[in-house]
Length: 104
Image 1: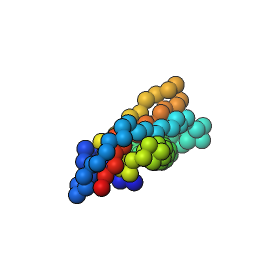
Image 2: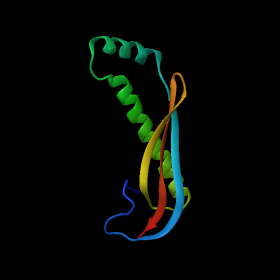
Image 3: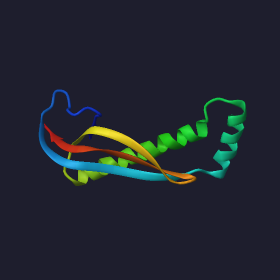
């Protein structure tokens, strides 16, 4: 599966537009991570526990978007984007979306 943030795939022609494809995941904070994040907040620096959690969430959202694209018959996704929204005070949704296309 080709995934790109541009509206075309260089060197390939889009022969069919399938439409919107998407994948999301919702992640909640974890007490153990919160304790470590609180300690890092006191001394400063990157909160690696949350960095890792959000990277995993983005990868899962991309995987689900890829599965949605394949189900709809696409072999590429163009215009791919991420968005994040707070669901409740300790949980956030990560959404990956784009346009499913067939390239040849």
